[in-house]
Image (tube, rainbow, N blue to C red; front, side, top):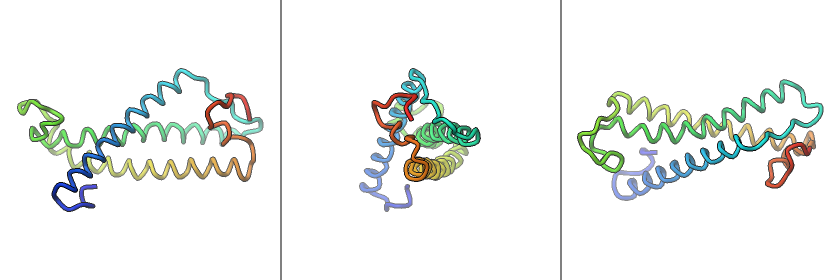
Length: 151
C-alpha cells in the first residue's frame, strides 16, 4: 500500500482511507460473527456430498478468519514503530510492540490480504457453480429473508 503513492499528503490521505476502511471491515466482520452466532446455519441442500459440505464449512471459516486477521494485522503493524504514532497511543512513553515485529506484521497483513482475495474469489466461484450448474438454490439462500431450510 505504501509503495503505491509517493510521500506527501496524498499518500497520507490514502493510508488514512485504507486504515478507516480496515476499521470498518473489522467492525462489520465482528457484527457478522455476532449475527451468525445468534442465528441458525442454513441446512445443506438434500444430496450434498459430505466433502462439499466440509469444503463449504472450511471456506466459511477461512472467510471469517481472514476477514478479521487482515485488519487486525493492519492495526498491530504500526505499533511496532515505537512512540511516534501518537494517534494510536497518545502517551509517547507507552510501551509498543517490539520494533522487529513491524515488518513481520506488515508482511502478514499483505499475505493475508492476498489470501482473503483468493478465498473470496473461490467463494464467488462456488456460489456461481451452485446457481448456474447445480441449480440447487444455494445462491438464493444467501439473500436476506430466505429461510434456513429452503433449497
